[in-house]
Amino acid sequence: MSKLSLRIEIDDPARPDVHALLEEHLRSMYQLSPPESVHALDVTRLKGQDITFWSVRYADQLLGCGALKELSCEHGEIKSMRTPAAMRRKGAGRAVLNHILAEARSRGYKRVSLETGPVESFAAAHRLYESAGFQHCGPFGDYSLDPYSVFMTLDLTGHVA
Image 1 (tube, rainbow, N blue to C red):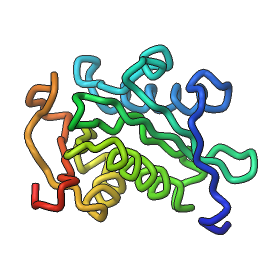
Image 2: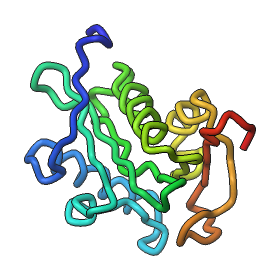
Image 3: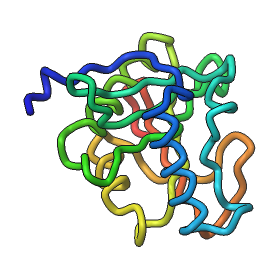
Image 4: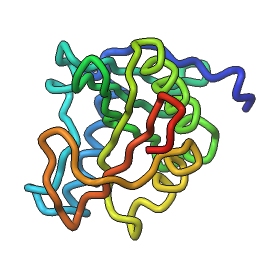
């Protein structure tokens, strides 16, 4: 499948196929982390005024999703990046990440950050974010140090984070 044929659009997280993917995401997070260390958002919270949510599709097939939460007028947070297990390695994750970063730049954000799980379970995600220039950082926003969380950030001003 050609990367040019991927369609990224603002979507409703309650759309049935997207909702199912988000439920898979939440189940996975609760299997890998204790409840107090799960920071994935449910559908209701992804519909918040401060969040823009996108899906990635090839024709009508859902390949993934991602969201951008506004933390401040200069700082955004990537949320709910997910591709179904059977659809991985088709370029959807990189496509939605690039789309989110382009949107963050167009909004004038100076920084985009994210919270993900530890390397043992999230190695592919870490590689994706690192390949886009994200660097490890400390907790941001309302987060605190947690052995089940890894924090990463990308300085969009062109300086090293």
